[in-house]
Length: 354
Image (cartoon, rainbow, N blue to C red):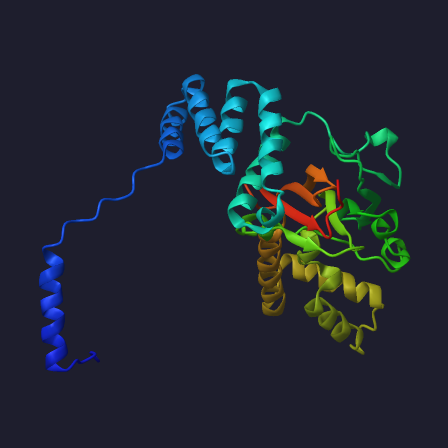
């Protein structure tokens, strides 16, 4: 072990300083602010599920610290728990507005509060707020603007069904941008001969949130999967089973029979005789093939998905004036036992003026 050494004179001086320091009175910690105290009381009541008493505490904390988004976010969730969804929605939008000002846009603390607001807004939505209804939706169009904002975001939609006889994938993807042109898909992205078949990254649902929004440069777009599902139609494990027609050992035996000058049988007779022998009295080569086929079948069934997978993202908040767009993405892969969710946030630059 290596230790740092000091000259003896320095050691003595340090010792004297420590003696002096030891007799100094302890410095009192700064008092807890009134806002923090009110929030702490509200949190205690909230955890006890006494929402009626917790909400006024959070409201007091928000009034005492009007620039802090966290007490306001607590109040929004408290109102939601009380069933006052109208107030909860309004307060969640205040949280987002507070976090949309200048440096707050890229401040991780404000970004965290905005993500909570997006998630809670999404929970309270009974129908899509920004998208037209399915029957009224066009291939390309405009999102419904946020209240108080005269600017718009544009979208284009593309759907496809792919796959084969054993599995089918249905996918709808959406591109959004600050201009109609930027939202359009390239021709090669929609041409069945050249288009890529997007698949969700289920592993991403378990990763930590981004501390700040993903920045989208001017005239760029964001493409997301509005819906994705794959359905298992047929998992062909039976193709791994041993078959006389696919057996190399049987084919070798039939070839030997056909080469016999004594009987001069037909090829069909030799194959049939070899198959019958393999079924009734299998020889070592056939036994080895059957064991390998049984092992392959077990492996196939183990890998077979027990059900299809599902994934989808919805817009929880979209404001062209601030450039902020929040998504809630959720999904379940084949072998997952439960659905997972994730909040995604994007910031289109430059923000359009109000």
